[in-house]
Image 1 (cartoon, rainbow, N blue to C red):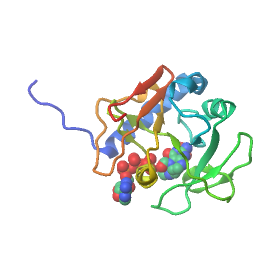
Image 2 (cartoon, helix red, strand yellow):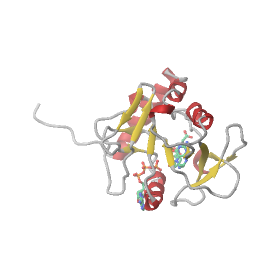
Image 3 (cartoon, helix red, strand yellow):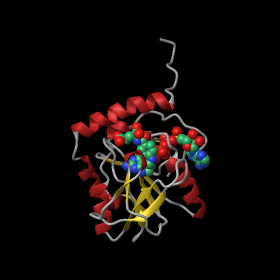
Length: 193
Ligand SMILES: Nc1nc2c(c(=O)[nH]1)N(C=O)[C@@H](CNc1ccc(C(=O)N[C@@H](CCC(=O)O)C(=O)O)cc1)CN2
Ligand SMILES: Nc1ncnc2c1ncn2[C@@H]1O[C@H](COP(=O)(O)OP(=O)(O)OP(=O)(O)O)[C@@H](O)[C@H]1O
């Protein structure tokens, strides 16, 4: 074979990655608990404001890790979509606090004074070792990280099942790479770090 297959488009990879992630989540529903054990491997400074996410179906469960971060003295926040096509707003949150439904099936804390996160846990459909990630296609994390990083470094930590790794995520000029990806097998330091 001399032909090489053309690179997958983001749209096609999203379809494949949704299936792969759904299968991984069914195989290993407790994988999120392994990530809690990685809390000391993330290299976070003490008492940071760390934004997590409220998981959608199939996403790596960030809650055990978020609880471990809170137990270490970090402050937690969750994103809220307040404007379609805008940047995410972050609101303080402690585990157990009630959430309201938001757009796209998300849930967020009720309106409160927004907080500026110093590190982000990021959900994803697929990732590669360069740190590039594919999300649902809303561009929320790219816009938000680009905005947050105007004020200084904000580590971005992808959370995923190991099975979500691909050779190469198709990229666009606005894509921002993750520094780390935490999976049930351990922490991957990406080429962007
Ligand atoms: N848990 C979580 N929170 C998040 C995101 C995310 O990907 N996951 N976002 C990332 O940007 C932002 C919200 N933006 C989103 C944009 C599109 C879709 C979306 O397309 N959702 C699927 C349905 C998912 C499901 O219910 O299974 C869809 O509509 O097909 C979701 C979130 C902020 N909060
Ligand atoms: N820094 C930015 N400034 C302006 N627009 C942006 C920026 N980053 C991304 N976008 C817009 O967001 C759209 C979706 O981007 P992309 O397909 O990379 O989403 P994604 O990273 O998969 O999704 P998400 O981050 O929501 O999970 C793009 O069409 C682009 O126009």
